[in-house]
Length: 170
Image (cartoon, rainbow, N blue to C red; front, side):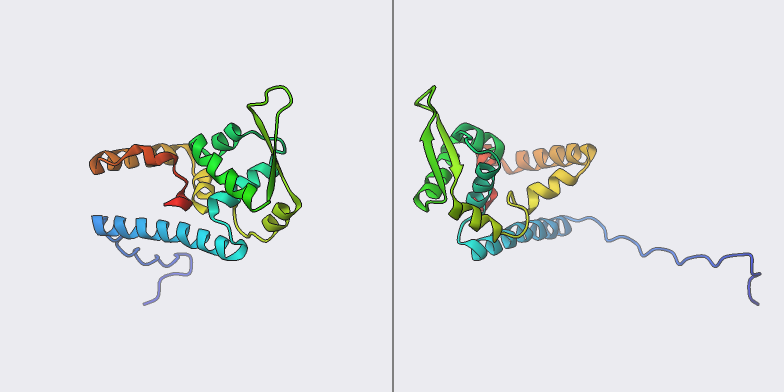
């Protein structure tokens, strides 16, 4: 016997979710790490620069005259790491550096035409896929993720000084 026309058929019950296990979470970490690594490999193949160098170059292009400390701050890395990235860009003649007229200890960085041409070849976010994805999450999700990762870091007894190392250098 068929149901009356005014009663909609009931949808099938959803399949039960896979239980959360350490193995499942580990697989998710692998997916995240693979996405990050693939993006940086593609970037390096496209332009011959590592991801951190491309990101630094994009910051310098967007902020002509920026100083070394501001590059480090915008990338959330240690100033010595930023300095090494800038030195590599200088050696490749992608940027220029001059001393600030008011304080000769400060430098001003500017992109050169070769650097601009190189950036035009890069597909995807300059800062990498993970920072872009994280910036798309809600505040509540970021808060939970931060707390949960903090607990994981504690269990690993991990060296937290690595937090200022660009992902492209890992």
